[in-house]
Length: 591
Image 1 (cartoon, rainbow, N blue to C red):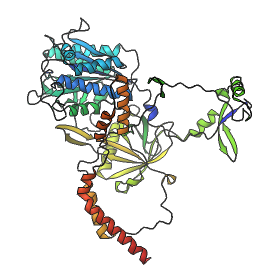
Image 2 (image 1 turned 30 degrees about the vertical axis):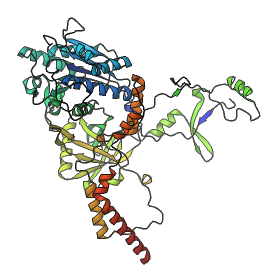
Image 3 (image 1 turned 120 degrees about the vertical axis):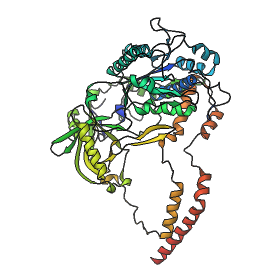
Image 4 (image 1 turned 30 degrees about the horizontal axis):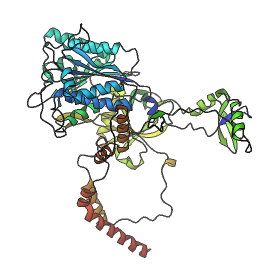
């Protein structure tokens, strides 16, 4: 190169990579432990979403189909995660020391062969019947937990989260003596101590079979109250226990496959804390607690990991690119392509150590070393500092620039954080107050001015189950700076509306308001679903043509229901538009 030093201008350092870097290298391991028994092979009545062409539904088919759907999604969204399917209670055994236990899919990163095998089991009755042969003597829950733990231990990879999905409809196993209960409870506690979380999925098929967890499993898995009490007895924090929530212990209905699949999807993602930082309540670090932050909402988008191109023989291949950095003025305009190629091959490639980063200022590039750039990124200590409190009614809902972060206390660094957090949470709810704070959540994020709002727990009945709709805690709402707020249109005129137009607009809004509120999980991204469907069809060698495209278009719930909207507010909308135009014409004539 002509110059010994290359500059990388306009270097952007004011970024806020709060979510993405924390998700890149967090590998998870999920092991589905599915029971095979006579009750799991009991035929069920077809549900509202079952096809007449499919085989008669059974609890075992429902469980395996739900696991297959989870597998399809995670193999694309989280390709590095390990997923396995273990069957217990089968006639066939993989290990003679543990009769009645076999692996349908080993605990590893899923491959296409394993996906096809599971799909064949669900589609073909012969494969399903060969697999689903109940053993004469089913294994004890103690052996099931031990064998599942052995599968996790045999993996040398480090997983951030390891979870076991226990799927059964036998509320009282054959081995339920006091000694068996103690042994199973010990195994469950051992799994928790080694970082393996047990997620129970108790299947109930009324009126034939109603699952009762109090017969056996409530003695094995310690129960946490559904109504969380912040600041309660913290003695349990000092000793690990196999605790599950009361909502997890409630049975899942197998009469409708969509209900089972939705429950499984809602609990497949672990609680991944984005940050764990101190929160200063009293100035001068006189009162500091530790909190963890979670992202309750995250935008889903197509994740492009590789570029592919299609060859003439209709075969897709991964595109690989090679390049060499060359200066802009290295070549002259009168050189031919042959000389340019020879000159480029003989050129000296700029080393990374000789590249300096700088900013264009006043027509010149001001360079900085890596240490100086690190100092430019420093905005003070990481944490949340509460500045003061004000009424929650003063929160401007139109000034939120990003989704909020959910805060929950932690005892990792400061003992007594849960009790202090609970007291602050309680007083903020009682007095309808919110906190104004200055926060810097991670080392790479910019500082921000935010409002901290307390939220109480909401428990409701969903699909016949008592579930936690909203968790108790606090939400960090990022407030925009002055430069982030858009100015009003230049020379725009605003007129106050009349009482008639205001009343009609209120009626239109009331008629179009959803009674149950807006639930983002009900509206899937059609572009993202189509992208995943094409990848799935390509990997599993399935057809995907115009019929599949049309079927997916019918399931697009993001398209507004125009007919329903017109029937509800069509006449009111036309009347409101006419009155507004008349008022605008009258006001302009008056001016």
